Length: 343
Image (cartoon, rainbow, N blue to C red; front, top):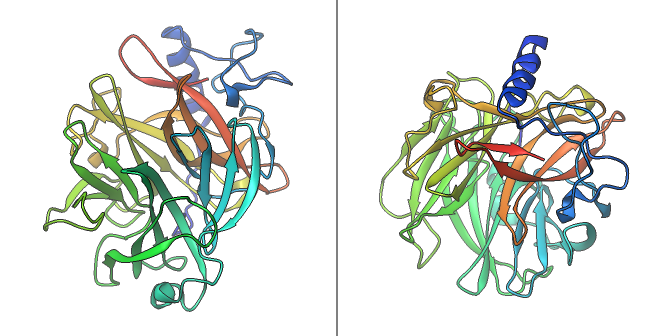
């Protein structure tokens, strides 16, 4: 969820460089043709080289903001996104999405200290592990870093089934960081970490206790930053020996004027250091762009990655020409050097 309005935009040179890089690597992909079901894992035959594909076809209830998705052992998908009491949607095929109410239909009074009494809470992160859903979510107001990240759990994910487990971490106005946009990552040794953050001094990481899902110890790391500039919505995903840190740069929440874009770096350690394709540290503003606005797709970002049966699936929101926020789904491939690209 965006916190501070920014005016930065992508230059034509950045787009040309991205295209050139993809073409040089033999990885340029094509816009999804009408009727393509990239969200379900199939793509159209190439027609013309372009830097980024269109979202795959999704149907039903697809108005979302800050989406996050988990898959249950039965194969159903549960999507949570920013809204009053956290808005829920379900799907059996990753294409048709249905409304499923709210996690907290009676509101979130425990979070009102951070939301000025509002029940609108932001940017949930949802993971199915140990037979239940763990959902971390943010409570804040625009432009403020007086924020809190809370945990809720449910065995079914259904509306009203969620149990508030309390505050995980909070930031105050005296802090130079912001406790929003949480993401749980479980490393290859079974250790739990949470990355989070927006603007201020960037993206942070803490340890969690797997037994409780709450904070463990005092470890507090910086893993990405832009000197106070627009970086938020971290997602860490493991694939083939690397932990990939996906973040969103630039301006969200401005409708068709949004300039959000998806950036990535990687590390062999979950705690970093993360570097981009050029070797620039993400703590020094580094990040390799893999998806940005194109045509009538504006400000794609606040991404989540789900390892699915056919491929790694990239979920995000984007804005239409009318300014409506919509669900985008594409798939991720990895080039010969192990860097992800969107198709």
